[in-house]
Length: 89
Picture 1 (cartoon, rainbow, N blue to C red):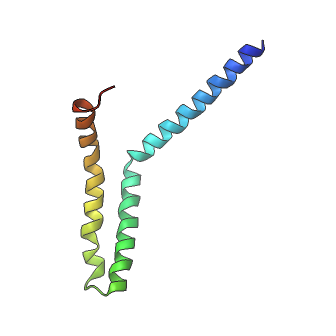
Picture 2: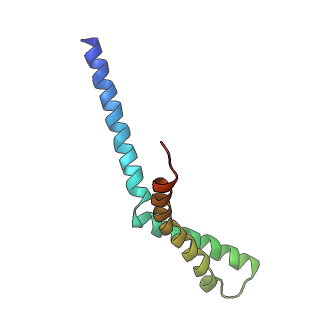
Picture 3: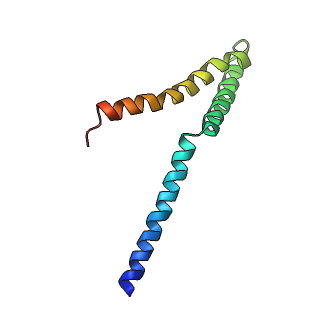
């Protein structure tokens, strides 16, 4: 009976881990994450541009923030290409 209980515990651990992995993956691919990245990047760059005295820091901060988000959007394409053509298991 002890062996069955241990197996049940192991299955429960595996299910909990799978649930965490699924939620992490959902967050990694969500638009909410991309928007948060954009907002935080924009704020950080704006503060920096204000601090160094660049002209129109709020407008000029849009370019690097958008570039960063665009780079995150292109990653799934490159990942799929890499897995298909280079990943050997």
